[in-house]
Length: 431
Image 1: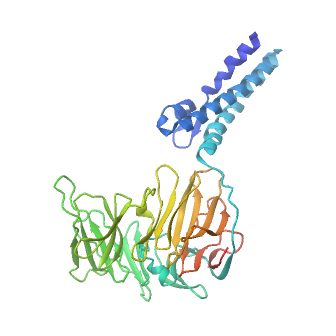
Image 2: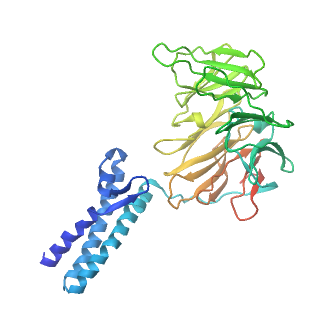
Image 3: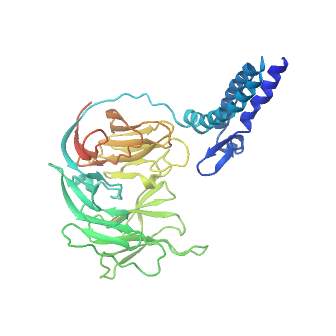
């Protein structure tokens, strides 16, 4: 190797000294980011190494071309190449390599058609706890939030009429039910409750002695239920469920669970005399008013966190999905009288929302790319008897669709295409 080639090789190692800019950590040496913690995966490190070798080879070619017949003005070009290399390093290691490793291509084709039966302007389906028993679906209603005003309402067929329930300040919707009740949690004023026909909202009185109060509305209405995990420590007491009316005017009811203390429980639904709980994220069970387990536990195989995505269908059927997952590919699974199945999402896609028809014959889900890469999601509706696709469409990046079934064959979602802002209700036909 001649002298210009050796000098070019030496200069090409500059790419290992150039940092990348991370929005959270500032300037970071990219080799430290890729190889400092191999717990992120050998595939990720290998892709980074390949990217580095390609960049180094290109840098060597540029430097060798400039140095083969050296002129003084070429030194200026070499100095000017450093900002270009800085950009190339950042593009390669902050975008190109992660995009290849983390985001799988999705070549699925569009399938089927939906018939829009009505449209409600300036409302969007809500991301809110409706319980696990498909009560709102059976009642053919969908909870929506208003785009141009604060507040919640109910969307109904056949004309997409909306019943305004209440106006709320900034915060989050905690719970709704088919009885037309909504529980809202504000940042400053705590919980607020409203019901169809009420002139104003009320503040349910918080119980004493509870540090974090997270009540749910019962599916039958007019009552609140919450889980009291008891004190921490080796002598922790068994968990209990409290049940009382919204206004706090009765003595309520306390249900001591026939389960060991400190079992990581969360209350998913209160449908007296039954209460659905999640244990350690992915074990779902139902207890009665005596605190005895009367259904389950069910642990959907392959699902990381069914606590954020679970529906009961019929006596023993269920649908579960990864509403949240720390690692691996998101999944949706079902076990029903009509059949069992599983859908594994393409790498780099999360399940933004999912919905189940009232009879459990259809499942709809919308996926979203879990990064800033230019990756599209999908809106998919499938049959549970054979897993066949009824409808599938590409979604623009960051569509963030929320889905809601009204009955067995109508589904509501926000208009994500060009046109008026609002929510359409669509009749689902055969593919």
